Length: 258
Image (tube, rainbow, N blue to C red):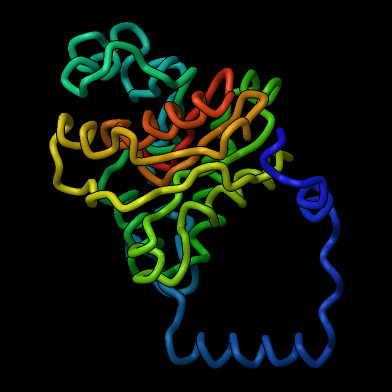
């Protein structure tokens, strides 16, 4: 990979410096005050104590890799996939899928949707750790044999301003740390319409050419992450850009799959 300087690799491996006692105490006092005023509650059932309680975490519908489509990751497409066949791809304006493979941790039911919304739109950043853990756990070993880095679909500038952070970057960092790979910002995103509410064809048209990658930034296979895969239009646009920049293969990884 040439998309990041050697210093970036070193920083990723260098242990963090110990926190000063006074600063640690201030952080503990601050956290205690915040917890008193705004107690931590489960994103799904609203029970106090955890951002995702153990019961709701166990109830999330994990996708069985052996039942899912080995190409696009559709939950029940192992034998005959209705998501990446020629007819469905044609409805999105494509003839082939640019992704080598795709995988998702859970199916997008109401509970998973609550986790995503609480993380993205309600600012509960601690859920990134929970989501990244689920995502990293479902990565096939074959991906790790050749993947050179983890990258992500960047949020739009407007979304970053509204939320105060790039939800995609935070997720990718957690995944990369668990997989022992560097996390690199390889994609940029000019203005595009929000994907929510658009049809499959409209999503494909909206995302066509909407992402770009650093020229010649990628010299090996890469894993691109996002929070949710709905029609795959965003991930396919990311793969198009990464392949154009030199990636021989692009794998897609998301927390939830619609």
